[in-house]
Length: 377
Image 1 (tube, rainbow, N blue to C red):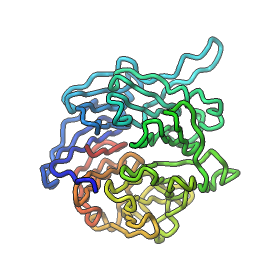
Image 2: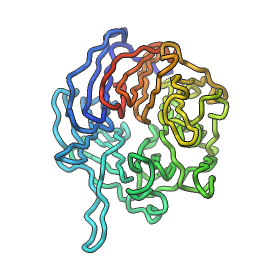
Image 3: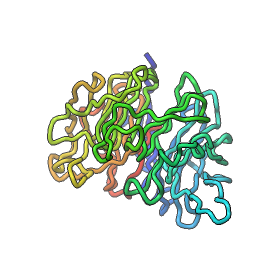
């Protein structure tokens, strides 16, 4: 079993109007909030390199620079813009091109590739940096795939904030083995480091599609690979909560056992770093029309400790009424302590935490801008 980390936790918080950093004491009881970073810019994601470097990458959409990447090599004290941000190739004369609206999902590459990062964008594209985030190139194996236009949503279609490529995951055993998700479009897998891709959507049922079990077109909101068992995958979908044990190549809906009125519609999903059977979700109102808030104004997380066979409600500390929480797909995260700490940010600008794996929740911050991402570093 992996050794649990102890000591202080740093939260990297991206919002609609800038970024913030919160640091705890060693007991995770006292927290200090930083001044705002890039105030006014939309920060979709902010990620620290878990491979041992001091680099933090931040995806930002600014009023004057547009979509770009900022990088810090001193743990967030200073920031520099990428010299070559992610961008689609210029279209040939007379043809309509594609422009990056915002950089959405940031992740370090495999441990054997220090300095390599991936970014998923909206419209849906995959980009790679080999110089620690300073410059970016398209991953042509995906962006120029012969079936690309069958898989992706054009910029004027898809989710309200635009179609996105997110949840880029690299198998820790093999840098060539990768997964990514399109919202909408589905889950895709590569076994040759992104040179070729194929859909991995068997078992998903999407009631909004003419063919609910089609090969592509599904709407995974968030997908996670377990770090100790990379063949165990979990997914929070527009239409359910799913688990896959990779040998089966089929998704199993594990959200049907949630008690009413809690639906299996939501955005984030969080894994226990030391237990492949433990997973958290934060259900939202999935009835028509989609409320995308806590059902009845009664927020609650749910945990399963047996791979989704059943779920336990965790609402202690949350408002008993009037808590109309909405949580985006990258705004719920966990640390590596024992007991594990959970963190979530709401679109109303609140940050909540649990130091005991969800048994009790405490509010850490209020009145931030709309929160897009919360990452525990």
